[in-house]
Length: 79
Length: 524
Image (cartoon, rainbow over all chains, first blue to last red; front, side, top):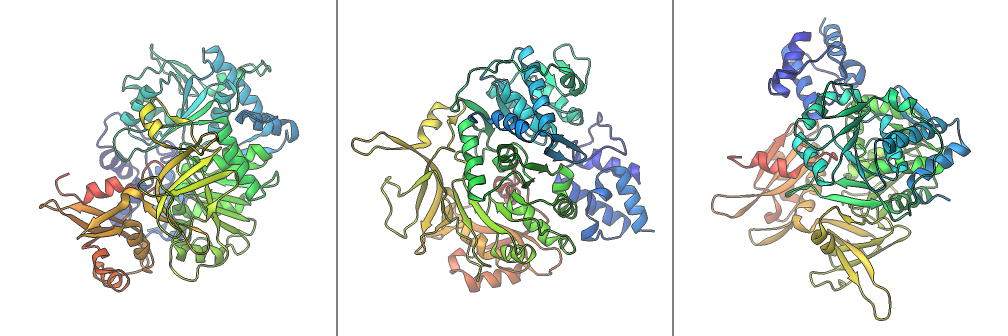
């Protein structure tokens, strides 16, 4: 799943930028890798791919700030 | 005596040395700690040859370093220019070239975007706070270098309050961004107006949502140090996730909040305020766009103890009018912008620069100590921004032309009608786009709305609207159009309604109307 998210950010949001390196623990928002619109697109993509809905109260930093956090969150709620 | 912006920090460091000045994420600085870092950054800047009046760029995300950067640059006598790391590199390169920035203050987390900016071959020679990289053309100091710089109290350069302090570039709806120049006096005048009006003091905890390139941030950045209060800077992540933002407000026991309406409507729409203790908030202010009355009512239910104030003012004058909403709005009429606040004068003029009849719409003109010095390096546009009031035998007074249409109601309150250039003529009738939008927002399923005109193939204008629905309410385009037909004259009902998942936004979180229009225009 980490790879899927990383690839989505690089290919769908950053136009396949070959120089882009993202670590699973990078702050995606503070570093400017994602803005609010891009984050919403990514969340939608995860919902479709893993067939679940993110509850409004789950739309929080601890679940989405890093690729690591997203992976843990999605794994937990789709288990 | 406090007459330059950094005086606020040094004065509060004397009075409240151990008090927390700024909090952001896991970081915080006391007033003493902030004053030391400011002094060190100023020292380093001077060593690097920065002279009074030089422009220094700030290339930072929402972070504790923003406060150090703003005041360190000002302490050195220089002018700070906030850049948005999220903006396209070409736009930042334009700003850097336009005002001759040679030094940037940044943070290692911005490294990726910064490299893109530097690749645009700007004349930037020195980076402070960046990641050290092998690059023969640029000298880099990191934040550890700043922390090791001298804190000795050298004599700051001789400056007066009307000297240039900061330049904020507008998103520039047409053409190139314009640099709005403000003095220390104008920044301080805004902070004083706000803290006086809302009786803010050292025990207050200011919540800040806006980036530093948006003047909404100045209540926290200038106002908190002025009174020795604590400012809580929401991180980028906190501004994106309403649930986290609500938790921050409660956890930090914020007492004052000032943001764009979007932050408040998102908080209410996400339904995350239940169970949060927001009882410490006594002042909630918003500006930049209207807040629909339905949100005002819900905000009043959520925070019944708080004064809710609608502030209005273009970046050229900062806040100039305010309206403290006295009671839950009984209907869905747009919230008035109130009246000019203290130390501010205004005129309402028609196309011929004559005062309008009472109750008639006119352009709002503002004369205040918060007004800009002018636009950077644009003498003609600076000159045409002003109306010179010349009364016989009296000195001239300069009024800024806001370009906003306003009407004074029978209750003496000013009502915002829209941008002068948002008044359009369709099918031979004059339509105020803002009026169509506020009508759309009265529909329970509509979260956000934009009305605009598109050119048709035969060069006529057609009125259309784009809306973002609230995710929990089902409706169709047809429902909304039917609803509008009951509320608006036929010529003001949009011909087509488009549903958007979310609107593109400008750097200052306003709806990017230009982009919405481009997305609806075939072939672009």
